[in-house]
Image 1 (cartoon, rainbow, N blue to C red):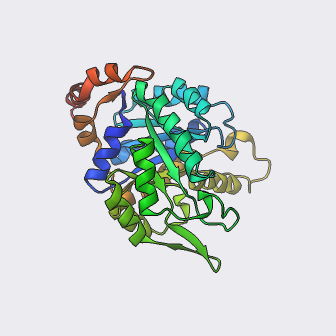
Image 2 (cartoon, rainbow, N blue to C red):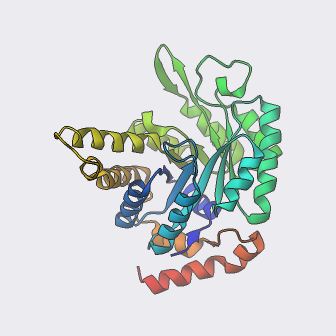
Length: 312
């Protein structure tokens, strides 16, 4: 099964009011567990890599594993790389064969964030690589002079999208108040109305099931989910380590199953289960490192033929 165009995948999720999980993976067991869950649930997924993940300073070998896993899977998979706010890292990410780049310059002031994100979009455009922008992060009270210390405003979000050309935007509608996190769903709904493009959620580990559902109703079509998966692995390893004289094989035993169970729970909650055939019929195939013209020529008909061969 080839990789699927990430833009098409997210547009489908946005149109039909569900969310696709962008699962962060930092090893073969995590990768296998997420794909196992998607196969069981017949769900589209995005596999996400980042040099910021534990033990993944060099993501190239894992990127090859992602592409190989996608080609062996029977469900639609998109591939993204998360990078910080340096356009040079976008060019490096594109070489891995990803179809999407999450470009985070949200720690900078608004003009600089816009300027750098626009360069990132220009780098991705010739290859048809989707660039996800980020505007504002969780308010921590430490950076009042930057967008990182504020929630996202609908007007600012609209200007940002118009000036950068991003086709998916990760926003913040949460802030700390008296030691707890408050989520402004009304603000998210206004941002959604102003933009009309898929919105992304990052760091969704602290949201309740009901809060996830409300975010999706307000336009969230992509949920980055990495830290909770790392926590699942860590918990499993701690449990395994309780046995005296535990070796490496015993330490990592059942971590893949633990990841699968958590990913299945998320897929069920976010409403993307059972969507595999629809995505394959309505999305273009993603050809790693092809030009946008080549990818378009492959077209949705190729994906549809794969559906027919697989006989879902």
